[in-house]
Image (cartoon, rainbow, N blue to C red; front, side, top):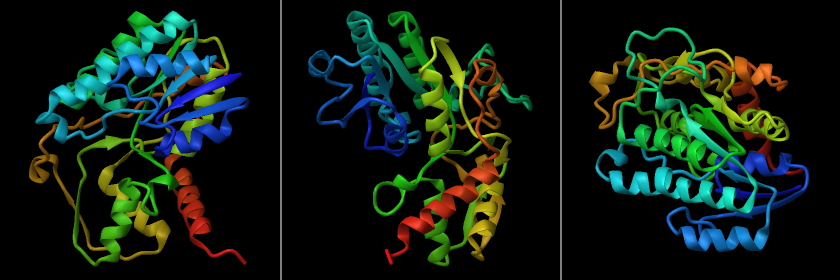
Length: 291
């Protein structure tokens, strides 16, 4: 099996590639830019993969409100060209999407299943949902995997950032922290999402899936748990989305059900607290000097 992984240098791609059994071609933006479809098609024609995995995306949720054309260029039109290319080449496409496709239902308190109607609140969310529709319309053999709140060790140590690293960095600086307590989701460890995704893509159960860790929490309680497990005292207080005042609206509840994943024969990922503890342990082990 030959895989072409677009966005391989990111947190998810970094944990996904080592778990693929076969020939893995890692493609960064220079080799596979979603906004340059002709060049991307030439690359895939040369590689001739069996499966194309798209981990690349425009993820600047707030910035997207002021530059919608850029968000749609990557998350919608670039993905549409990719899906068309995969259909033309007769290869499978695995595309990662977001819990942000939900949010308009302000009364929601139960996990979303794949058949629930989406309702995006902002430009980023709308561009991701439109990308899903493009994959469904243009590529017959596809997996669309919605996930949530990704964090991985590749997002630390200067390789990028994630919520866990941001909290740890700000706490180490002694800064007071205000984190929203009225947005509930499931932060997910890239190791666990990658493992489940690899198991799924080896099947022929094509379609839309939710893949996250288990359980749910608010961003404030997630931050609180980070500090507890890391043994750090932090000046942390809850705030509301309105008080925080981010340019883009976020879902107040975007927990995703993994029931369909389980029914396809894939074991769902562990509970989010257990996953966070494993992340912090992996992070420590990579920062310790070799003996």
